[in-house]
Image 1 (cartoon, helix red, strand yellow):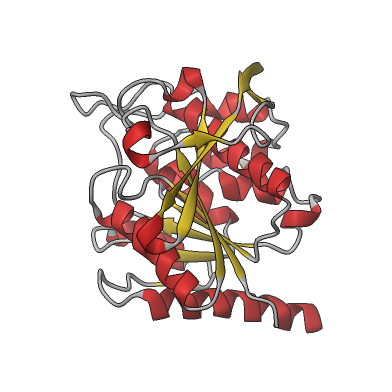
Image 2: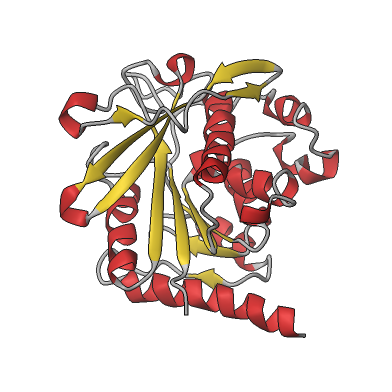
Length: 276
């Protein structure tokens, strides 16, 4: 039997950004799932605060070069890669000189969210999908971590649904409590309409805030994970009301079996539906 393939689409991960619940899970989980016998790929944004020399990032010319349209404007896509030797795994970075040149991740020195985070998020999610296509690597499970990856389930289900590489992919979305100070651009709804989404598909983003962004990702996912212990009870109740497979917060230690079993549950459920 072929190994299951898990694509990790991370908002952030160690060692490229400082330790926190999200960055720690995004660093440790792929390694442990790989050691458990699955095949993995990692993606994250190439934030300008990442030291490329220290982490030995280099551009992958064969994957770079296309333009992605965001809000009716073309933006060049640059793909970089680095290795985490002790984990025996690589990380692909989505880069663009306009969106990711500033020396910070998602907020400034005063912890205020960057005003263009909505367009950066759109660019990141589209960039991951297009790069996976170029890699020719068909994931069985796409696991999106954090609000910055929350639009990828929407794009896979509504834009890339006829793409053979994603045709059978199941999507898992992890909800975290982490958000930035500041608002999501109110025009994100209109910007997504320019990608030919129907009103009803993105209706939840007419009044965009971080809860709406998380709910967008969860609504389009096949399975949901409560990523940390501080996710609000209201959000957890809402997520459980969707009636989808859900993994309650598995704790900060020894969580690999919980995630591994959850992936298998999602894939087995899909196989049972196919048989029926």
